[in-house]
Image (cartoon, rainbow, N blue to C red; front, top):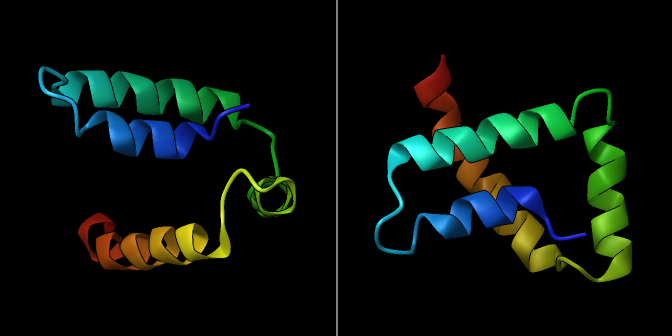
Length: 71
């Protein structure tokens, strides 16, 4: 299972992908994560090696930076 959050973030790097596509992908991600414990999912990704601690740290740093946008 690929990490949907990283897929969404990385899709913005490809030419031709608009904000609408990113919004649609986020809605799909949101539906897929309904009822799922995010902490458990992150731990599974770390334990399986699908993401590294450095990737998690970077994602958490980016989330903290963006947090001000949503207040």
